Image (cartoon, rainbow, N blue to C red; front, side):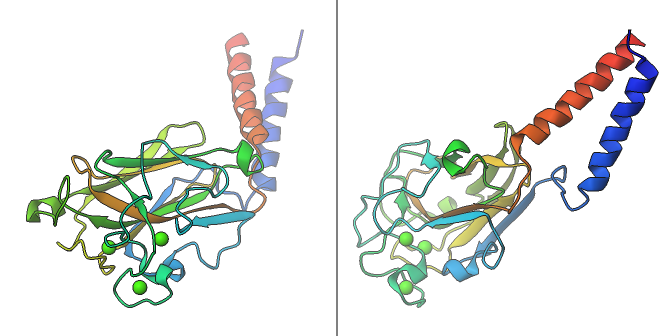
Length: 248
Ligand SMILES: [Ca+2]
Ligand SMILES: [Ca+2]
Ligand SMILES: [Ca+2]
């Protein structure tokens, strides 16, 4: 029979050693939500200048969502007339208040009020992003035309999900939009989240709206993130402690 007292002591010691050995990891910290903040080019991203083990920014300029390890859950389209496509300002090469030329965004195409981006750890070297963001770029009237004033009030939400798919929380509603569908960019806003134990998905939504756009999906992972086995180990340690307490 095991010496329960000794074993519990060992468990406590192991936890103490782990916590001491990993002082720089704040994986148990609460998530940090970012935005909405003005965004005219990738240099406006709060993630710029940070060190990542990987980092991707999808600007949709090739007309496809094809950066690694991400998919969009809802139907969506980049097949919008370039006369209206509301890209991030700098994608046309000049930050001048307008998206011009052939620049592209991700468009709701009269069919969805949310975009949910799912991340695949296996397609990202086994590591979910710790940082993720998306840029809101436009809202028009449902089924076409310039928006009503009421379309611009408390219209946008942003939510993120942890490594297990549980919601990390939601921010909003925020009032976004400038009454124009002429590719203006002063209204464009970045939303993001930082969660050091991993982000499985982010979602931006405009409840009741079907004519809106986003651009510059971006995500990365901090270097040397803790592997999934660490969390399994920690939960195993917790179970061991609980079973030892029960057997006392
Ligand atoms: Ca773009
Ligand atoms: Ca421009
Ligand atoms: Ca815009």
